[in-house]
Structure formats: C-alpha cells, structure tokens
Amino acid sequence: MTDQPFAIGLLGEEDRSGLCCGSEPLDRYLQTLVGQDVRRRVSACYLVVEKATGHIAGYCTLSTADVPVSELPGDITRRLPVTPPHP
Figure 1 (cartoon, rainbow, N blue to C red):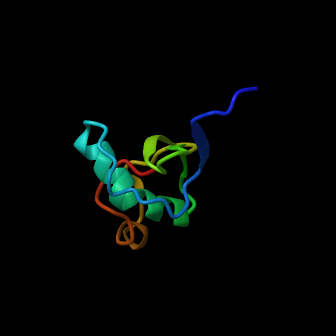
Figure 2 (figure 1 turned 45 degrees about the vertical axis):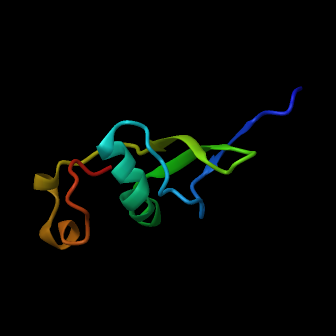
C-alpha cells in the first residue's frame, strides 16, 4: 500500500478559517457553525486533511435527519443558530 497524501478523520482542533470551496454558505458553516452542531451531538463532521500541510481539502457532515425550525419548541430554538433546517 502506498503512503496516502490525505487523512480522513473526525473534526478536531484544525484551523478551519482558510477553507474556501467556492460556496459561501458551506465555507461559513465549516468555519463558524459546525463545532456547535458537533458539541450538541446533532451531527458528526469528517475532514479530509492534506498530511503535508494540514490544510483541509474537504469535509462531510452526517446527521440522521433534519427538523424544520417551525417544529421545534422555543426553548430549543433559542439555543440554535439561525440556519434552518437543523440536523
């Protein structure tokens, strides 16, 4: 097996500020919001990281479902970012 240039793993303490995939909502989500979803255990985030540089080459978030904000009680929605639907 050859040495792979990329590693795949769960989101950790990587610097996410430099990601630019060409989609502003996706960039913003990874840079500012994904950590909240992971801490709240509503999604898991996997990163593809270039081993040589530590730069993020891609990411994928997984959740079992999403819930429209209108169906959530107020005490929950107050704690969530305003990016519906929520995983």
